[in-house]
Image 1 (cartoon, rainbow, N blue to C red):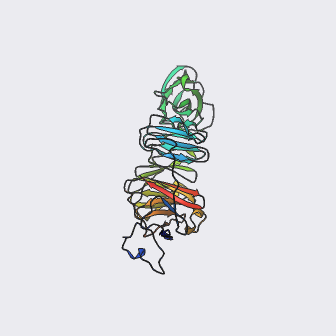
Image 2: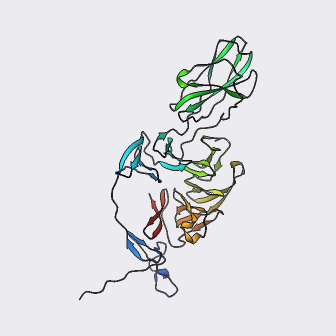
Image 3: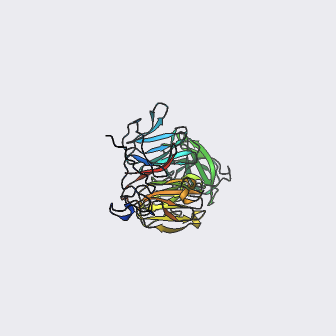
Length: 402
């Protein structure tokens, strides 16, 4: 005699890894919704009914992979390289080589993808072209003289690199030369950044203190000669700024590109995403920053043992408070709050993975545990990847820990 199939479920409260199997939450009761002690390779719908997950197909074999994907581009780390993946036939193109092999962090900002592995960094256009992200600070120029007629006096001279995209980079301290009225200035640099295409030269008026643009020359045309300082009134704006620092975390806030480096957060110099004022503009935390997420009214930063909320439109006005003492993994996702009805907000939210499961950071600076007293995870020294997934009638937030 064949017995009828045994119906399992539903479990409206989902999986519970927090309580012991003998806890009352697993016992039948009229006022108690059923919970599942362990779910392996199944999805639960919004009523708690299980469905086996679909299988997966290997498309690209990678080593130590970190991924990035949007509507235009799929990027994958393959050990010491970054690949572009074509989903039409799953072929790959090598965009970046010679990396350290440490995990790469990808972040989309201002129509391009910025990346760092903590040692080096770069950017990739949505068309799949790899470019530099910043040039080194141009060295203090080496000055000389040649026959000419610049007015007698004391001159200050500085230089900046300009890359092939036309982006100007940082200048160091100025060199000083004193002329007697019978010479012009010659300008050379002791080192040239590999990504520099041009050098912009700035010079003061005789005995002046402010530097103005004088000349732009191709890097191969050095040394250059300054025959006149009455060229422009364009001041040098990038002196004593820094190129991007190889970081552990990248995120966006109010158009700024934010870098998490050890226990500090550095904002870009306004919308100049390749420049940073590391001496003046920074936020510090009691421990290393492992994740960040910018929202409309402020930004979240995580350490292994806390979540911090910062408000203010500009770095000068930022105020920061610790909002949670949960333990966290590295990683964050910013999505619309409408995708999680429980939160009852249409504004963007930040999602993190804590030792108590998935956590939402809201625009009012509050932290909401999405599965309170229901999930426990080992997040120590781990990184999380979080995605929002639509599959048929399922709407899910999935995360992995590694």
